[in-house]
Amino acid sequence: TPAAPFPPQEALSRAKTIYKTLAKDPSQTDAVKAIIASIRAGAEKYHFAHGPAGSGKSTVASYITYAALGSGQGVINMATTGVAALQLPFGATAHSVRKIPVSDEDVLTCSLPMSSQ
Image (cartoon, rainbow, N blue to C red; front, top):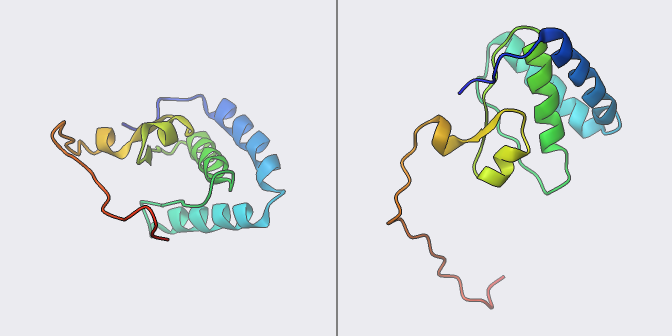
């Protein structure tokens, strides 16, 4: 589901506030610049962010979301888990957005012994 309609001026205001936080970390500003450049070029439609907790993934996604909404573009923020989706503006799980079936019968196990590294 695309992000809900959001007043452009409010979205731009939120983007500017978030950018103040991003500006403190060159890796985050570099990520934002690269993603925005690819969006403007029409090169990529999906962007995947990964990193440890606290590395700025949600901040980058929030900035891009509000900047895009402020310029009249649509955004779909997807995450692999519900907890991660809650960290994103208008976030949803990939399973709910893309209608990926999940069965109660699916059992995920790990066969690594506890002593493995």
